[in-house]
Length: 249
Image (cartoon, rainbow, N blue to C red; front, side):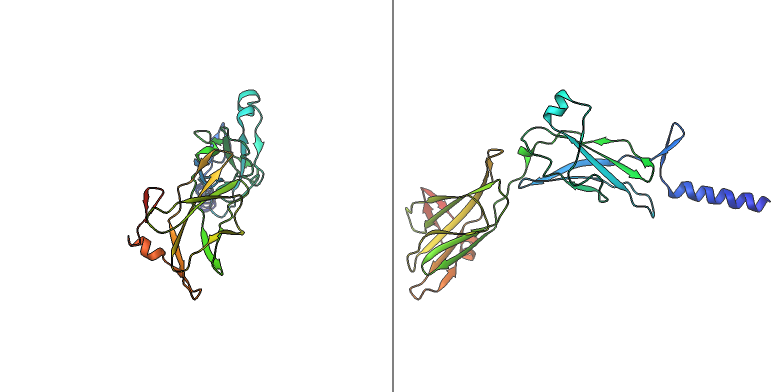
């Protein structure tokens, strides 16, 4: 009899030890997710949080948001995220939910069977105008003596300002706007034996911001139509040129 009581007590002790739930008013509840933050680069927004850990159990999470209008006039209404209600991982791509350049409140909670945590809310509302903009990837090719570039496709919200010039003292810098990436674009006809240089930056009209320019890349086409990249020389500080009154390396 005593051994049975000890065995029962041990089973109960292990059960409580392995399920790290809280007791709220005598009812078991999951701890709420912690450390909410939004990582945003090039208009791709991801909400992350620290996972709720219950050994040998799968925790699901629900994500909801409020735009500026809901926060001001309908504070009791929260909208489920398009892709993360529910989700298993401790992150949620909220890009499709963030459709305006206004502050968004975000919250997440955990569920395990009938157990539900309290909501955890992002400490400071997120605005997509804080996204980090980076220069796009760029591929430079030729068609005969024609200089062709292909820019990384970053999505429909992105436009690109491409600056290009012939590398020589006093050269004029030309700028071409490219409406979307992923397609070849003709810049100019190259002069045989001369180096031609290109750099690019992005622009997002929705937030009226642009990225920094990419690293300058220069190429040269010879009389025999051989195509020669010269980016390494630029990186080492050689091949200095003046474009629009400023040095370009």
